[in-house]
Image 1 (tube, rainbow, N blue to C red):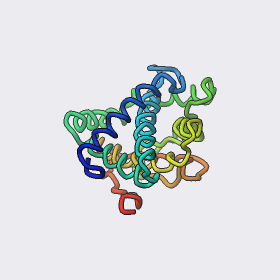
Image 2: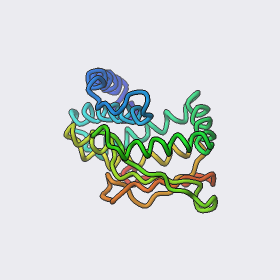
Image 3: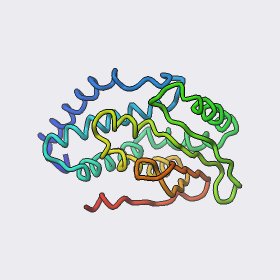
Image 4: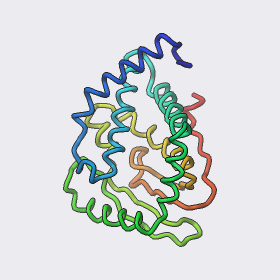
Length: 203
């Protein structure tokens, strides 16, 4: 609404929702509810639906990414999402959660689903970071490429920072696959979250 006005903004939202409903059944199968990354693919489909609606109106990928980023930030800061995010942040460092991630990492190495993520857990030292995840394959990169929108993937990486911050978790990262790196090197810690603002917000 801020970018396009009330009438056009509501029309874009309605159209995006219709696109999403059509796209949802065609999201790649990577294990269903047993794979928590299935939710990431659902979010990626929602982003893609909105991107296509904005692109149809002449928006550049930077313009669309700015709206998607700000909307996602607003969402994770809303009630009750902010409470849910904090709860997830507290669980992130639990022994049970880390053991679950180790099992998921080992399973990912089997590459049972071509469209899935592939990753390894990196042990932290409790000072620089508590634990890390190195992704060597990204399901969202694959999905956007399959859907003919690979240009959107690098912008999606930026949303990780406000999402982790909403959980009260610090994310440090030096590279991502979508942005041309050899891996996505997530490093998580209980330290104060880092504030990272993407340049395209001011483009």
